[in-house]
Image (tube, rainbow, N blue to C red):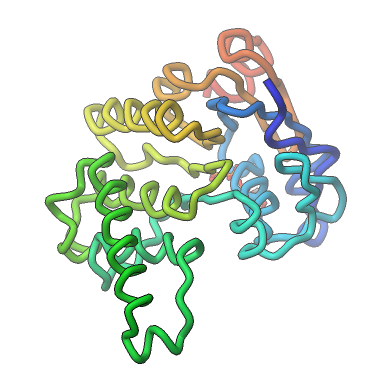
Length: 253
Ligand SMILES: Nc1ncnc2c1ncn2[C@@H]1O[C@H](COP(=O)(O)OP(=O)(O)OP(=O)(O)O)[C@@H](O)[C@H]1O
């Protein structure tokens, strides 16, 4: 299977702090990959580097054969990386369906002229977007709440909506930052099924940060463990989780 994401020698410093140092990873198309490690190890910083929030001090990031190092967030999203956030970031004052449509806007284009004058092209595109957004909402069993305000959804559903919105941008790689944070065990189980479903039915490649070891061992095929900004272990999930160094530094906490 071909590599979708290849990262070499990625690093960044904040003042004197080496937040990420010599980070490397290869993620194959269709893989479900986990990034784990103690608090402050540099996991979210890796996501911020991959999505252009921070520019790396060194290193190369290649997505599907294209060098995306140093591109802006919006350019990286267009190149095919979408993400969710540890603290959910939705358009809380918009409806559920409009949140998904906001993601779709990347791919459906009408001119401002058509939009203002409400010309036929505008209506056709609006209709197509509504249809596509409803399809996505059905996947996440949110279709009955399409007209609710995003802010009024329960927490677990807000997390799902954030994933739906990210998928609406039609990414090649989906980054999930602690998708199970704040969920109860039932919601987490359901989320695991949703993530698997997305991978299988959208041909998606997924990289996720997670502290919930049940989720990690349940769905991730390979893992990278970060500790103090450096890779502590990397490889097949079963092997990594049984690595004595990983148990001492992280799992035994
Ligand atoms: N913009 C920034 N400026 C200064 N320091 C930062 C910045 N962003 C992150 N850091 C520092 O970099 C280190 C790594 O932080 P990061 O948030 O990536 O860790 P993490 O592994 O995601 O932790 P957690 O599991 O708690 O979310 C921390 O020491 C953090 O304080």
